[in-house]
Length: 267
Image (cartoon, rainbow, N blue to C red; front, side, top):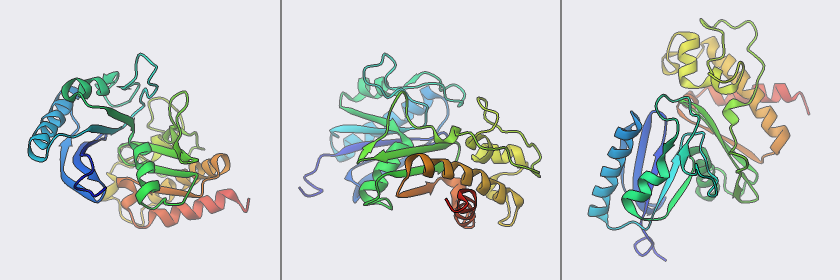
């Protein structure tokens, strides 16, 4: 089936900072995309709905909507809370019913999963994870999330993987302005040290303003090295892919690789 004959799909990536919408038949046939700032649930979902309606008028009826969202999410189709963003630390978004909103507006099937599960599936099918199984994708940006694929299937369970909340040792002899973990739930977890807002609070300056030789990067790499060691030892992935805004620092992935090797200590 050619791209022109394939059904149109609407896609929504819901992030803590921005929403990216698109319409097309696949990764090589994207007809249109649009960015929306993440504000209140009402305003954000309404803006997304309006753009999808315009896209439908311009490009034709889409047969389904795929949604990859920040979480935590209720992904159990048998649950009364299926389709909800649940206990997110993002103010105002707790218990937001994303699936029902779009189902009521467009009356098409909805695919719903975490943004990072959507990302790991895309990397497995078309990107840097082809032929790699088990595969892990981790994003470090507004938050820290991880998607896991095993035997060609996305991992769900009682909830879904929450790699950002893996416990790690507190950084020793930290030079940070605020040394505490910034997670509202845990005293020493990955997200509380290395996500964008945590970096800004702990070091007093945004991540993208830190110079490449700033001590923050060594500390971030050490925290990530601990997290990746735990993942290597529990899931034995063939590849771990790192993405997100914080990871755009060119020096960071080599630093993380070095700390991972150090923490594994030859094992």
